[in-house]
Image (cartoon, rainbow, N blue to C red):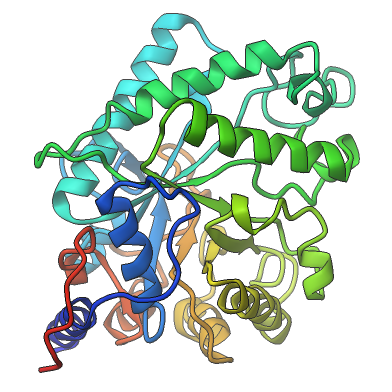
Amino acid sequence: MHRITNILVAGVLFLVGCVGGRPIDRKATPETRALYQNLGKLAKKHTLFGHQHATEYGHGWFSGKDRSDVKSVTGSHPAVIGVDFSGFSGRSPEAIQAAKEEVRQNVIDTYNRGGVTTAAWHFSNPISKGGFYWVDSLSLPAVKYIIPGGEAHEQYKEILRGIGDWAHSIKGADGKLVPIIFRPFHEFDGGWFWWGKPHTSREEFISLWQFTVSYLRDSLGVHNFIYAFSPDNRFHSEAEFLERYPGDKYVDMVGMDNYGDMGRDRYAIDTAAYKLKILSDYARKANKLAAFTETGLESIPNTTWWTNTLLATMKKYPMRLSYVLVWRNDTSSPTHYYAPFPGQVSEQNFLKFYQDPYTLFEKDLKNIYKRRKFLGVF
């Protein structure tokens, strides 16, 4: 009954039509505008559930056809599938091309099924070794080198051109460009990535963000991206949350990554909920979308984590969260997973989470890439 109810509710919301905010890209494709506004509508009563790399691989398997661990448990893929642009630079041309094709097909498949894609970017340091992590003995503070005026700025533009070309290539079965929620430079308030707070000034980070958006959108003509801003959980006020905010003209969605308050370091549901409320309140004030962009509990040993921790956190205050995404399920590691699979100890509690009317999965989404005029309510 829950699935049917959700479908009817989603149908009502789409039929009612979408009003309010719109993407920062005034030339955004119709499908991108529809996704943006439908996410905002649905967030009034629901949150889409997402899982990183859900359909690429899972616990003990790789490259399954139309497979995900979430689908194996619930019968539906997650509503939001996380991918990564990590392979789009810092490798051989052949490896880059293979990575782009693999992600391209995944994104298209998700769109054709009616699901939503969000892309993180674990961006390998473009001017030094060390990968995307900050390594004291290897890494250089690349932000100051790749922003306008920096000595590696042209190199960065070339990397963005590769992303732009790829963005123009992702077309669904209907011939339309697939919208992507693009989430670059995440967790920038920590120090583990080379773009993190200890390795770049506030002004440099803002310059990097603004240039990235402007170059993709205005110079390269990428009009199917929704831009998401997501620090880690190291803030306790709106002012702290916005400390490196690049401005409303450069952000579509505000989010937060939070593992620490959700059981990894401590169980602090009240604190986590308050932080979500800060970004949700700002989103409503600024006419933006909001999301719980990353969370989870590795190995999910807590058998009631889904309802008593995650759902309780998101429901504590009246918030409008477009989606919540948990991290990936590693193929070979016996412990590195964040969504249940058949037989995992939290499986039955996850089914309760799935059945709650608040949560939406891929099967619940109907025409999320189309806008509907007002036709009344059933």
